[in-house]
Length: 381
Image 1: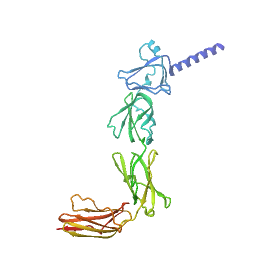
Image 2 (image 1 turned 120 degrees about the vertical axis):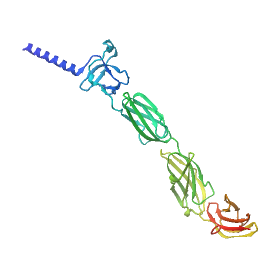
Image 3 (image 1 turned 45 degrees about the vertical axis):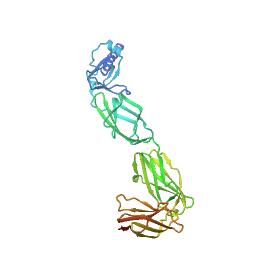
Image 4 (image 1 turned 90 degrees about the vertical axis):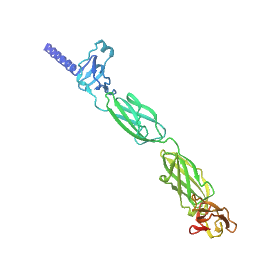
């Protein structure tokens, strides 16, 4: 009985070894691949191998797992000692690689915002591949290599200020290509306000600001005093003008309840990265009242025309005229000051012919009023 049991145990053991030999081939052997053929490794951390050599590839293996269709590396010296012939073990485990590589980005992220031009470029690939990129906006079709035969990458690359639209090209050993587009912003420069007006003196509600910032988010005008209070007004950035890297904006606000008062004002600008710049506060006198022309008349003596004005304006600046009959009309000064009684007399010379004159009175706050209901037509004979 014991003898029969030993015989049965021996038969079972032989059968088990036979099954294992069929399902798990071991001992070092060569596996040969043609170009573009691919094999899988049993190690999860090691990506599949694709032959990229025209004359074919030879790899040293120690085990072929038929169930999972994968290989385990062998010892090169043992393969060499065993001869240079290719084994038939796992010959059905090779396949032509027709699948494009898959790339996964950690950085940059699509629609991401970065405050330095040196942006971290971090990615992984599911197989060895070459990676290139091009700038879709101004790269002119030029491809820049990132890495060769890599499965991962982690380093910084310098990108342009503002919006970057980058296309990545990934090519595996079999020549399969994949593409990935990523758009992101770079805003490494802080905004700067270089000029504001009026700098001093009087204001009537018209303000001007000049700044340098490629990616402005908000621009506000803060103004007021302790008497009437402080307020804030948004500037419409779409109405501003960009010229040679600088942006120019005009804004008009109603300062009616500040009329006759002194107030401070300043501008605040914020970019898309959250950087803030505040201009230096300016103090101005508010004058919303336009000059009043009480009298305006004139007399003609040959080519000489004498004008008489009577104006009411505390902050008087100038009375000026423009001859619209000239080829290049421009404003010319008639009176730069008024007498104590608010009057002014000015004589000008005109050539023979008809003259279409525009005359206006301007105060120091920039308020302008025409000296007459319409243009004055004067004919010199």
